[in-house]
Image 1 (cartoon, rainbow, N blue to C red):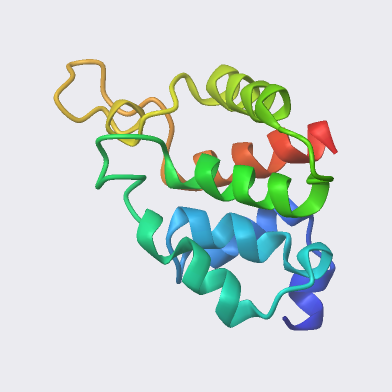
Image 2 (image 1 turned 45 degrees about the horizontal axis):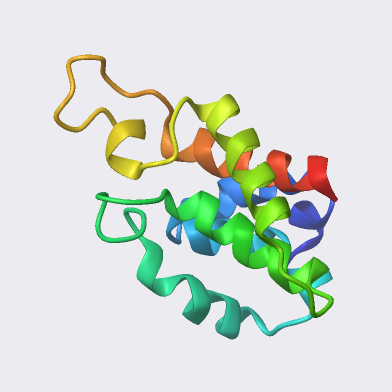
Length: 131
């Protein structure tokens, strides 16, 4: 990561990463310094979550990435369901949904609820709020 990226807020770094990677990978890379994993491992972890989990049919990739980072940062041997649920609720409040298809307005007359860049930004902010 160059100095320009280092000086950006994490949420804006994530948006910059989104220009080259999927939403999940962008969120994971934004937390890379704290996660302590090589960039290539984070990219591999998030590789299957482009267009959300299940190719738009399920959970947004940005939320998946935030929950992966949450587990890596906070897991202490205990179940994390309450924290994961709180993060999901915070993301849904910010974005209007958690399913990629719903966020993108696929099959709906309502249109896009939240752009991919805003989903990435909101996922990072929701996790930062919890940390």
